[in-house]
Image (cartoon, rainbow, N blue to C red; front, top):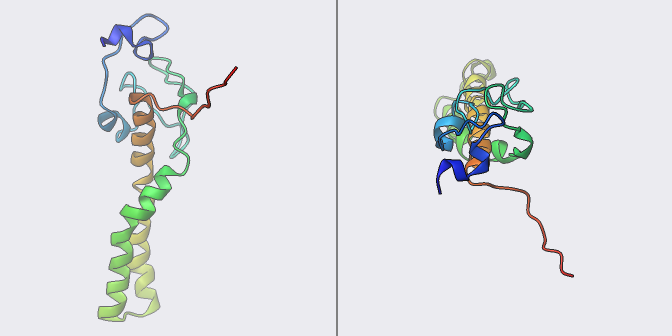
Length: 137
């Protein structure tokens, strides 16, 4: 299938965009079609459409996916670090505030945006849509 035969890769002006990797665009928070426009309006808020190619982001629904991936994989090292610090050093509570709290915040908050961008770009790349039941006549 060529790019011109995939209607998702053609914008309103008729420009045919190359098929981009969701990993390359999603992690950077760029539009999955053109790779140039910003995907996010704020830290985690997705724009309505791309300001460069006009792609409508209404298809994008990563739901709780980013939070689940962060909880399962990204924050695990932070929790292990905090537990090992407590077991091995038995520091006072204020040491956990100075050391463990920043480690846990960095390991949970910072990965949210790249993971959300990756999930949205993957939805575009793999044509993921909400499930539908076939109506029988």
